[in-house]
Length: 159
Image (cartoon, rainbow, N blue to C red; front, side, top):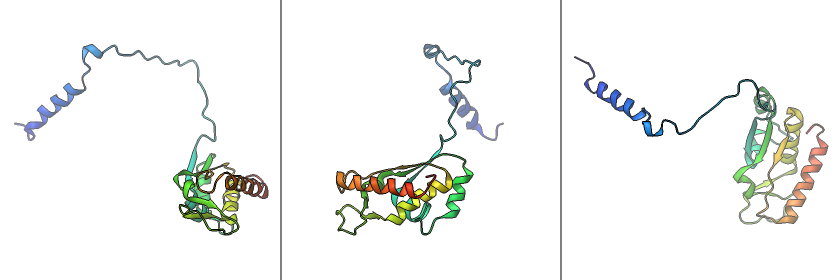
């Protein structure tokens, strides 16, 4: 007498559900070449994606107050790329002169925060992929942000 009377029927049902039907037995052929190693995964294959506002205020922090604990976490991972963007790119605005922001802009990127991205890159040896908001302020704004990013990059050798 089994302690679990339905278990045998359940196991039989599961086994029959995963058994390959003879009709589909030769659906594909797979071969593995064991004589060639193939392509090597690059050392900077790994990466971290951060939202603009999180990178600026918490994860990496501004240049005036870097998050050194997070820096160490990234160092522990080895080499990689930091991508700053995501959905927050479309509601983050570069506004160094303090002009009124467009209505949908809920986060302003400051020079200190942009410098924080580049400082993190230089300290960690991880390149930065920086998202640019092409929706809110228009092309002129995007160019200004790009120029500021290049200047910040030059200010932090190794970034």
